[in-house]
Structure formats: structure tokens, C-alpha cells
Amino acid sequence: MMKSTVEVITRSPSLRDHVEEALASAIISGGLAPGELLTAPTLAQRFGVSATPVREAMLNLQKRGFVEPVRNKGFRVTDVSEEDLRTIVEVRLMLEPPAMARLAGDVPAGDVDGLRGAADRIVQGAAAGDLAAYLTADTAFHISLTDLLGNQRLTNLIAELRAQTRLPGLAGMLSSEELTVSAQEHHELLDLLVAGKAREAESLMRRHISHVIGWWAGRPET
Image (cartoon, rainbow, N blue to C red; front, top):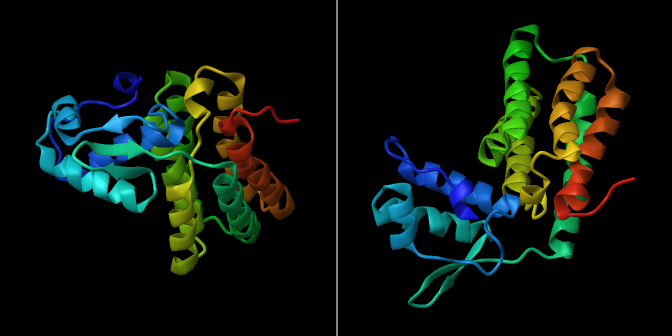
């Protein structure tokens, strides 16, 4: 499972960040299942790097609650409970939909093309079944939008909540209509924001976040 989710890294000025991003994407999407044991030597060989950036990445993932140390063995991918998902989603719903309502009509014209490109990359990642690209572009898109409000504390809070969010059913949704719909929602959100439709943008953002405890948790949505 991991081989199709984690890409080999050959050169990078920040190997730790790339290793962490690849592993986080695999854990978030369910490509690396809860209980799976990860060892620094094995991962270092797979990534084509030394064990040092792998260990550093694993320690960061431990802080995010994605893995836990196993004495003399490595790290084990942690489970994610329904309660964890529910509470994270609850807080995100308090912050992100109202933030998009505030942003409606105030997206600078000079930023629209860049945001449109990020939305395109989300759609492309979904179409290609590249969950790492999908999740990276998704985070960049939403954090860029929030950042336009000029409240760094809000941006940091939302970024932290997103960093903790797990989507255990996402890996099983490759090539699905649900993944396509979710990807396209980013273009729809941007269109609503540019058009100044605050209520509609807030409603769409609320539905979009709710996928975390719906489709991405392996549950149908009505």
C-alpha cells in the first residue's frame, strides 16, 4: 500500500519536510493504516535518503499524533477515533465557513489566477489518483484563502487543525465520483468568493468540511 502512496525523494534542500509531507499524506488518506509499523532504516531506503531526515520527520509526526514510538522497533501509525474527527470538524466548522463568508467579494483580482491554478492542481491530483498532490494543493488553496483575511492567528489555527485532520477513507475513494465532486468544490468556492456570494460560500465550505466525517471517513452522505 505504501509504495503507491509515498514517492522516492532524490534531491531536496529540505528532505525532512518532504519525507514528513509524503508520510503525512499517506497516513491522512489511510494509505498507511493504523497499527502499521514504520522503521527509519526501511523508510530511508525507500525514500533514498539517510535515516536522519526520516527520524526528524517521524518525531514531527509524533507531535501531530500521527505515530507513536515503539521501543526498539520504530513508530506505529496511530488510530483515529470518531470522537477525534468529530471534535476537529466541530472546531473547523466554527472557523472556516464564517471566514469564507467574510472573504466573499474581497478576493484581490491579482490573486485569482494563482488560486485558480491551485484549484486546478487539486482537480488534477484527484484525476490522477495522486493523493499526496491532492492534499498538498488542497492545503495550499485553503490556507491561501484564509491568509487573505489578514489575521495570522486565524490562519495559524486553521492550519494546525488541518494538519491534525485524518481522512481514513480517502485512499479507498480513488477514481470515485465523490473525490471528483470534492475536488471541483474548490473551483465552485472560488467562483462564489469572487462573485461576493457570502451565504453560498459559507454553505459550500460547511459541506466541504463535513466530508471529513462523511465520505473521507468511509460513510455515505445524503
